[in-house]
Image (cartoon, rainbow, N blue to C red; front, side):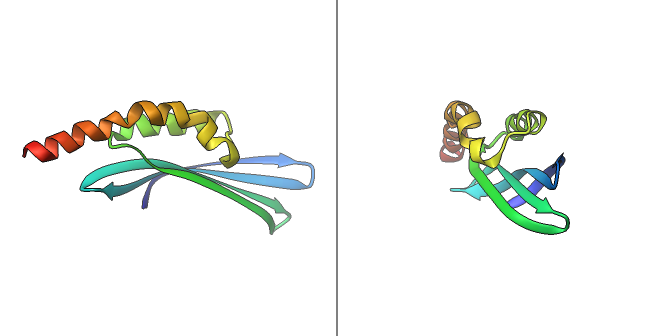
Length: 109
């Protein structure tokens, strides 16, 4: 998977700083372009990383605008990697048909 967009947000809480990375990733699945999302959170004390959390959904849609819209929702609401699937699960279920449409186009060509 290749990162095609990266948004960064930092939150400071007393001694701990959390840096969130929200990424759109791109790959190819069965000959079809697929876009997904990865969220990573680094927890730091000073310059030391004390914890890393990461989660991703690699194949959300072949339509990048849908995935960019989801990424912005996650970024604007400071969604943790731990809650990624909970938040976008219904969208992923809806967008899966986008792949069916692209597979049909490939099959008829």
